[in-house]
Amino acid sequence: MTPLHRLILAGALLTAASPAWAEAPLVEMHKDPNCGCCTAWAEHMEAAGFEVRQHETRDMRAVKIEHGLTPGLASCHTAVVDGYVIEGHVPAADVRRLLDERPDLAGLAVPGMPHGSPGMETGRHDDYAVLGWRHDDRTPSVFAEYTHD
Image (tube, rainbow, N blue to C red; front, side, top):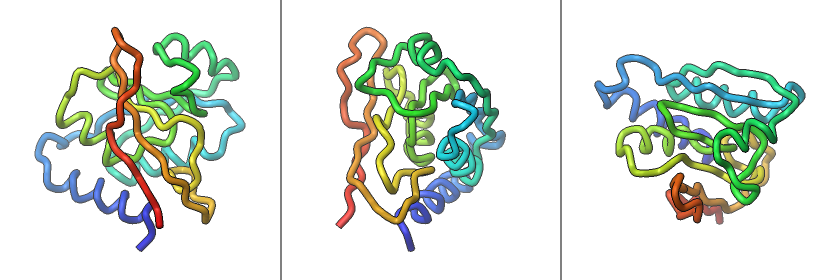
């Protein structure tokens, strides 16, 4: 089983096990119209039980500024789910955990576009971290880590 399949299965199991998810959480995703990996991430989120609305814009910089993202947290797409900002290729299981635990965070980010993260299945697997940050202190902290042998 590939790491992506494990992530999708984990998201599906969390969905089935939690009565709080009777309705699919809505993800409002902003992306450049020419970005295919963003669409692949949206499909990953939908497979894990989220509803995704895609909004296309050529001014992603303005979207990132509006949502308080620093350049060090930036990736290709920016989403909002239940008041949290989700930047880049964050696995659905981490978004579920965020919504379940409700920590004092502004959101989660996977900076850049690491190979092997949801939506970036290229056959190569980079190690990467999912970072959390707060509105009052944008110093990121590690929310989850993904390493590959």
